Amino acid sequence: MNTFPTDNFSDAERLIFEAAATARRLTREDLQQIIEYVTKAGFDPDAGEKAGGRLAGMYWQGHTLRGGDRLPPAEVHYLRHVVRNREWPDDTTLEEYIQSIQEVILNPDAYIFTSYYEDREWQLGFIAPSGSWRGDAGGDWILVEYRLSTGHWVTAYQFSGEYDRVARVSKRSNVVWLRR
Amino acid sequence: MAKEIINTVRIERTLKLGMAMLEELAEYAPEWDEMPDTEQYTWYMDWEQFIFFLQDDLDAAYQSAQMTSQQKVQYKELLSKLEEAAPTLKKLNLSQSPVLPAEVA
Image 1 (cartoon, rainbow over the protein chains, first blue to last red):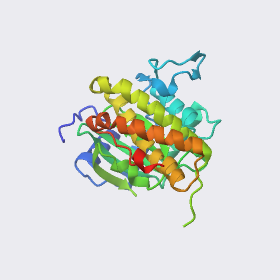
Image 2: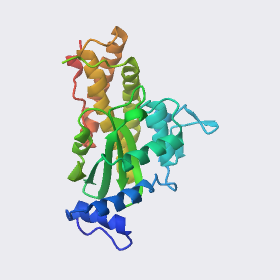
Image 3: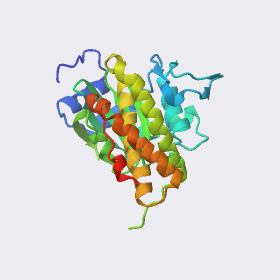
């Protein structure tokens, strides 16, 4: 678990890895450095994700989507969670979805945790109240996750109930809370 | 404890989402191991989110008699399809439905 290639890590990435894999205790300044870094990470602009059946038939960017279409992850997650699931207010734009994610990461009261997905991917999660970003079918909380190996956000969605239920899903292990 | 009012938007959303997720599951299961890891992860977390919605929206609405008769029919159909998908869910280590069709009248 500790053989992750860290040579090309930035200081913030190294801090995330050490907090997750070696249980290094972070200072307030360390955590602030991580937060500022992850806020700017965004979804991977060079990756593509399949639209899938959930988005098939939806009109987007001038054409009707098919299940096999591949879109940038930011658009896929926006269309799934904002437009289709109505977790965010109905008039939320893609830019506002991104803004809401950054607000979660920067929220001084956000819960922050690291975890290991299927014993191969280190991730950093942020959980904060959905507040004014809660849509008609939204939840109490917004989860944002960042993946260390890609250096980008991997998902952002809303849920209700206990804030830590997303940290207790079966494929996640080695959960370490950095702030709660 | 006052019962939570589950709005009809959440009930209808989760009923439709469940059917759409099951269709995607049937499509993705044969190629699961070949899926890009990030895509596999986000699908997995979307599935877990759907299971949360199933508990929070549908089961809660059913238990507190907030579903229409039509929604109950759709809910039972969804639970039946989830039961049929149980072997696939187990194989991919995805959460099973916490409710069985027999528990819905």
